Image (cartoon, rainbow, N blue to C red; front, side):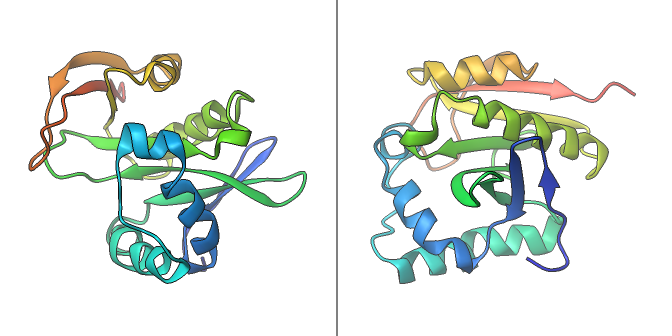
Length: 174
């Protein structure tokens, strides 16, 4: 999207999520691990996905300059996942999150994208504290979060959600 910063790694391009990513987002939001670990978003059509992007993603991008990024593989220009920085109600610090389509898991893409987002959070967006949340049974996310250098703080619950989550954080050393 024009006017907002994109990022690159050796293998990936991270572009702000826009309506042009609706087909990808529809698939991601209905993938088995998304539904299991993140939850049902009731996005069932491409139009639903476009509305989700307009209503849930673009406002934060406009307000903060960061948000949800489409992760695109450079070798073939395919969108393989999402990664971003999120201002969530009830969470102390900006949340780093990631999700990938099943066929792209286990290849190091999530770590590569999340490491770039973490770096951008501190250096580009001047965020002082980055948090991550995950469910207790999402072991692969816990491993990635700790590999990024975030430390477990405590169990929490977000407002209007009964799910117990693990909270991790990393503070910028100044």
